[in-house]
Image (cartoon, rainbow, N blue to C red; front, side):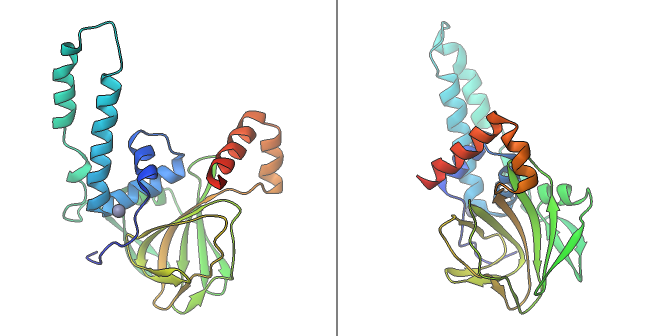
Length: 231
Ligand SMILES: [Zn+2]
């Protein structure tokens, strides 16, 4: 994958990724992008080192000098730069009518077995169950296909794995990480065909919604995170 990466996760998302405070689905999406993108790999390493230093520098009873060796050790530790430098960490798996090399984290998730559903219009979808807060799926768009115009209630993250697609706001190539908020209306279309991994804030559907309403804590957290994004 030598195509230039034009779209990256926000700094805020990379910081949350580095400190391990993302949902499972979002974590996988960013981990996959970081595996493919040297720029975000470096950023993440810096955030991880800084988070470790911040943690170690929190006031304690002990003499600060006790920690200096620890800090130095953490900074010296090899970061995830060693992954995928020659593509060897990417597994090739067969999807529909051709083979696609996947980032390791996605290959692992996909290895559990994918069930493809045809959504019509040349769009195929295979859901992955990665957490309780998001809907995660591979989307395969056949050449010349387009999705209906749509708008999501929450946010939608798309990582391009193979091929390319376009919408009103741009053209996206492999490794591009696209974030859309609920206010964006778009209609993705693909001339050459496209395999993506997508993470959506799960809207309150009837079946899931009743479960959530029976769980006040989850429901509160879900609505609070939506409110934060809206604000
Ligand atoms: Zn990036």
